[in-house]
Structure formats: C-alpha cells, structure tokens
Image 1: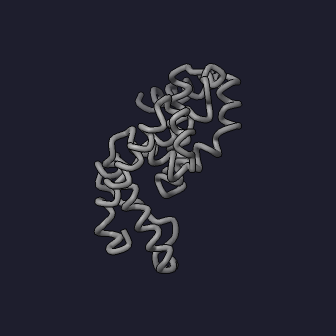
Image 2: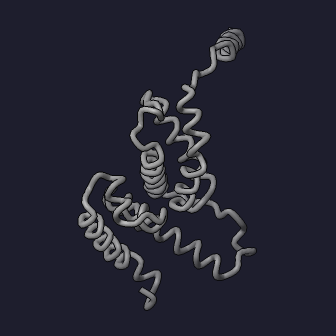
Image 3: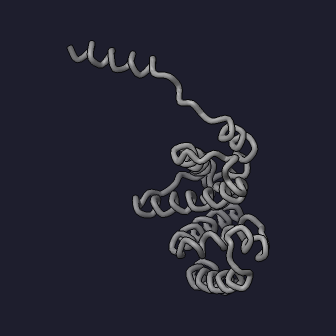
Length: 185
C-alpha cells in the first residue's frame, strides 16, 4: 500500500503544471543574473554560495509577485538583494558553525592566494557582524565600486550620511581585522 501511495504522489507531482514565470521576471533574470552572481561571489567568497544567493534573490522576487518591470530601478534592487542575501548566507554559516570547503585543495594554493582567501573569510565574518545598512553600504562602496553619490541615490539617503557610515564602518572593520592584519592596518 505504501508503494502505491508513494507512486500516486510521485505521479501527481510529475503531472502538476510547471510554475509560470512572468516574462518580466525572465527578462530581468537574463539581464541581471551576472550582476547578482558577481555581487554574491565577491561577498561570500565562493561560487556555490553565490549560486544559492542568485536562486534566492529571484525566488524572492517571484514569490513577492513583484514584476521586474514594476521595479523603479531593477539593477539597484537586485544588487541590494544580492548583498543582503549574501550576508544572510554568511550569518547562517556562522550560526551553523560550518566551515566552507575551499574551491581548490589548500595544498595546491600558493601562499599569497591562501592569505587572500583567509582575509576574505575574516572580512566576510566581520561584515556579518555589522548592522545591515552599514554592511550594505560597505559592500556597495568597496565591493561593487559605487561612489558615495551613487550609493546615496540608490538608497535614497544623503551623501553625507553615506560618507559617515563608510567612515565608521571602516573603523569598525579595522578593529575587527587588526589581529589578522597585524601592523598592516
């Protein structure tokens, strides 16, 4: 009986209509999936987590029934969503006390690459400790390369506030990274 029930369930699942994806969302994905992936990869430090973020961002957009054409600035919205989802991934990784597997075996990685990889992990952990707005502004400024004026326009805040948050965030991150950087900070 269990086998028949399981088979019926599987057949009913296979016969369900596919999820209808609005054309606007599909077009937004085509236009911006690279931006979302690159943003996530810079923050999380690995392609696997970046792919998870990419999927999360567009699934959230689909679930909210928010058409990309209805977004005032889809690129800005998706970049911010990628930053926030990436920080969520880093925070959940810390909460789970899991250690990500390196992309390459550490024995084959040159020392300078290992240093950069270690610094990236320490920076990601430090960023996950920031307030969400500070982490978002830091990522937009230093990982995405936006200037203070562009950040202010994207977030709808003043350039002065952006500058203050950038300054305070850099100070906080310097304190967090001082043990790792030694005299270099």
